[in-house]
Image (cartoon, rainbow, N blue to C red; front, side, top):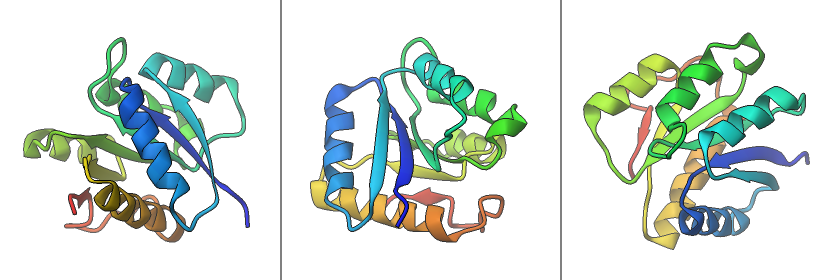
Length: 145
């Protein structure tokens, strides 16, 4: 089975470590590349033809936040097939609706519970593997629990 190529952009090293630990505990084969800001993520996307299957994009990062990254990603045809999951510890309906309009495939609310995070990641990645990236049904954009 081919590994699911995952990029994660989050300025919080502790959150990234927690996230990767949860990913490693899932029954999926993954290859993860980490970024601590949106600029480095975008540089990698433009410099590499081996694009990720999915990007987990923290919304609140310095230098270039997740909202800006999402807009850039969706403005280039080269990246149209990348599944983008925006995530944050904060859920604001207005922002989440904007993310959907701007082309995010899912919104994931960060969890401080390891068990809950694993559940959310598995649910998200199963959608990445099985869904049509361009069709997000109503009510299936937000994954809170």
